[in-house]
Length: 214
Image (cartoon, rainbow, N blue to C red; front, side):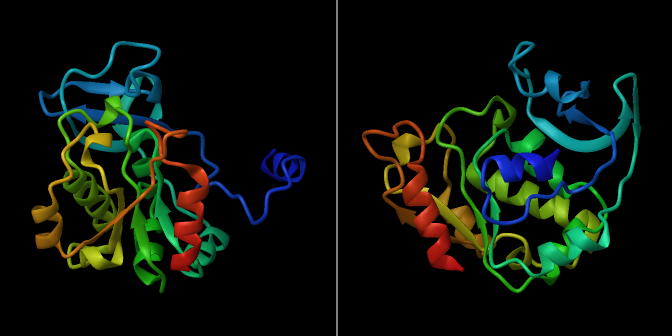
């Protein structure tokens, strides 16, 4: 299916899933609530979450919250390790971004890559990031990668750049520049949101910026 759609859309590059397993997500909130299934986390089919996400894991069934595991294959590992750039993009933070770091082998492949590692925070409200700051998001990505690559993995091997718009009012969550500096992550302020793209990042400006980093 990915091959056919790539041909149909004339995709320039290779699109491949992190894993091909049929799995589900389980989020544990800080109040102990377990939410099994992506649809219960994104705040679209059901009410938005009422407490911050504490952890995320893979499970086999919507009716069983027992942890499951999956491994990336050799082809995926090689793609990650040979990447010109690793980007954690805008989108549903836990179910669309961080979920890709949960399978075994992803964290180690990211750590082994010799390229920039960039996080682009959401400008619009993401219900999954309730109570979070940009630095919290960076640390969540770091924590997920360390679960696979080891606790001694430095943050620079997971995220070393954060791209933000110059106007902090475009963001619904605090950017906390001082904390990002203490983490050793470089923040790059740019003109990413335009009058025509507001409240979202302008796709061409972001694409040109990312290409300039490769």
